[in-house]
Amino acid sequence: MTVAGIAGRGKDLTCPYCFERVPRRRVEFRCRGRVAGQSGCQEVPDERHAAFTRQPPEPRPPVFAADGRQPRATCPKCELESAQRVCPACHTHLPGSYLDATSRIVALVGAKGAGKSTYIAVLIHELQNRVGEELQASLVECDDRTRRRYREEFHAPLFGSHRLLPVTQSAATRLNDPLIYTLTLGRSGLLRRGNPALTLVLFDNAGEDFTSDESVDRHLRYLGAADTVIFLVDADDLPGDAPQDVIGRVTEMLRTQHGIPAGRPLPVPVGVALTKIDAIADQLSPASALRRPRPASGSFDPADREAVHEEVRALLDSWQSRGLDLFLEHNFRTYNLFGLSALGNTPQGEVVDPRGIQPYRVEDLLLWLLHRFGMLPTRRRGRS
Ligand SMILES: Nc1nc2c(ncn2[C@@H]2O[C@H](COP(=O)(O)OP(=O)(O)OP(=O)(O)O)[C@@H](O)[C@H]2O)c(=O)[nH]1
Ligand SMILES: [Mg+2]
Ligand SMILES: [Zn+2]
Ligand SMILES: [Zn+2]
Image (cartoon, rainbow, N blue to C red; front, top):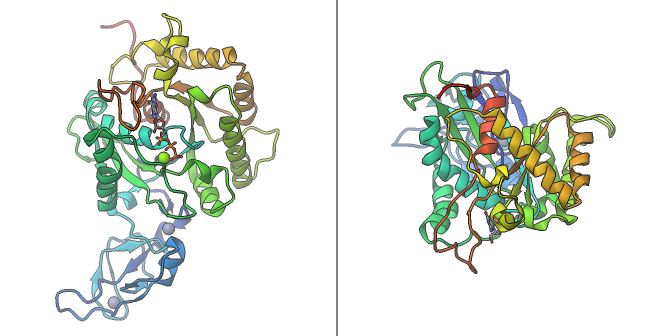
């Protein structure tokens, strides 16, 4: 997953598709082409976009350079005005709402089958419904592709047909588009001046993308661009080597990208979440913080956060997965432990439990991030 940004404009921007860092003024424009009988430029094969998507080049109106900080520019060839801005590195269209915010990217990483796609599907649903109401948040898609892709590939199968999601295809065979959302907190739910906004870029990788050497480049850039990294670990897989393998490998990638040698902690904050907590409920003590829901206070609750963190740490201990905890401690300046269940119940074959999807603590990670980004206040105690 990639999350991304707080309103306010930095000098540079990270393309949420190819993850190149680009100075804002270097953002380019695509000519409007021959529209409505106007004599715009003729379409030409877009080799750069093709190289990025690894598809045969498609004819598109040409891209031209102009001041990318402006919403519009005039094509030097046909003199038509264009408002379509594109990334200079991959030529993908950059949504206006994305360009208007400073992005913070949160990478979502996990072994094959860790529950990444299911988590994304349920998290978005929760933010658009129950949690959204509690936080008075509004979550709006930044582009049509996000709207379509979420609806068709995540929402329809899981919430419509109650079927489990298919295995995510590796980026080596198919390039997945990220899901890009603008999250706004505040009473009106509208993007108002002064309302903090965060652009979330959720990039749903296949588990094997972090264990094979295919398409390493893009993953390196993706991880290097991340302001936060979330590791999802199947609680049922612990103790086991697969999750640690992925975390170890990704940590190495992060070191390469940040140029920080082993022995020194990485500055990028990480959240590590045990997924499918429903499957290990019988191992939790009745008093466990993982047995009670997060208090719905509309704010960040440090006491609850601490309790869950300690509970997960104790679980890792009891499974002799203490190595994971130590690894995180040695490699990261800040890490937080989480436990969640996207489905709430064990699926039956290819379909979800007949009781339905009953998510549990899927929003904790996001609340922690929002709090870190200064968007969500701390819960006030001693009042009711
Ligand atoms: N019990 C339980 N099972 C879950 C939950 N979430 C996911 N699963 C199971 O885990 C399987 C894999 O989940 P996905 O979300 O597809 O995993 P992924 O990390 O996207 O996997 P790849 O795309 O292959 O990398 C699902 O088909 C479910 O059987 C959960 O909350 N509880
Ligand atoms: Mg998947
Ligand atoms: Zn790009
Ligand atoms: Zn033109």
